[in-house]
Length: 343
Image (cartoon, rainbow, N blue to C red):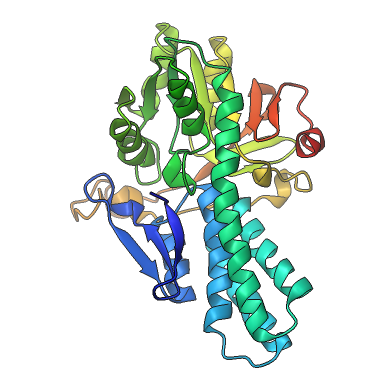
């Protein structure tokens, strides 16, 4: 079961609607760019690797929908769609990476409109297949860091629903379990939209991997009590200075450092951004209503008129990171992104 894939039956993008989990496992189809953008903004599709593939499929979809009869016209339509897709979630670098990769192939190899349609879709499908292979490699390398009996804290969801399949942080855990190790997972609730309690817990429960949900603010106490002995998270962008990940990750890194607990980041090389610095990265600010109301309930969770700051991401300094796990291996401090990219 893939989180996102191309549906050849009607030339659309098929994906799990993650806003319905854990209550309902439902697939939806995006048939135009507006639907793709809405799915990304509403978190129906989410997770850096999955967003990268979604961006790729989105550009491929725009080529299928384009009525342009010239190469220039079709490329223009694809770039317009790509820019709209990129703007939906600015912090996650994989989204733009997926868009740009398909555009580059189309521009370099597209000799006519129909060929562009074919190669854009083929590239997007290849990226989906590559994502699964990359995650399996991350899992293989990362599993060596876990020992039998470990209790691992994870934040947000970096599992198969954040990717095409298998997962990054949860992929490490899955690989360790596949190796015969007994691993217990502590999953934080995690804003926005409780992606840890809803999705991470659902994934692990489905896989029969022991998992317990806690509020984000419980992590420090459990560390002080010696309950948690490893932390593994994913990432949405990694610069030379910081790991950008779901809001609350930085807090866990500080707590882990205070209690001498390894803090690992699992992410594909495509999430690395060696060219950007802190001032170049925009932190996504989400709707106040995600906090003001609980789900679809219209009873106020925050008094009317009180402003709400609902940030989606924070930044963890590299000095708090014990190692970064990628498909190229495990890299320890001092962590240099160029060395990771070269493998």
